[in-house]
Length: 196
Image (cartoon, rainbow, N blue to C red):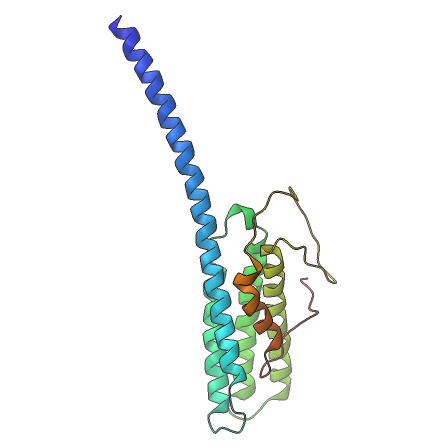
């Protein structure tokens, strides 16, 4: 009798533990998604801030070049942090886009330094602008995906597992960054770069 009671409680305890583990696992998944949302919103805010700083640079200032390169270095650091964020399963497709964006921004900043450190180099400046456009186009695609939209354009391939099973970051959370990426005046931004 005691053995049956013990087995009954052991079974009940096991079921209760499984239920608790399942519930706590769901919380972790939501926590991961919230953490990613918070991280991405911080990234968008930082990019918008750097964009504003770049747009406020007086081109006639003696420190204009240094100010631009410094702001681009800061923006690059934000892109590198963004690429290191752990991406939840719901947005696993952003993995390649985020690493590509960070890589292109890193190349853009290094090439801008080549263009503006010392004597001006037009070829390096043109190449840097292309890298910058590619980095920002990746961010635009990421914003579209986070908003639940399907990015479009030449060279974009869309593969879905379950079209109706995704979560989005509300448009108001990253719209400032989206407009900032498209309106940088000191450094050109892309509106038609391809993902390939």
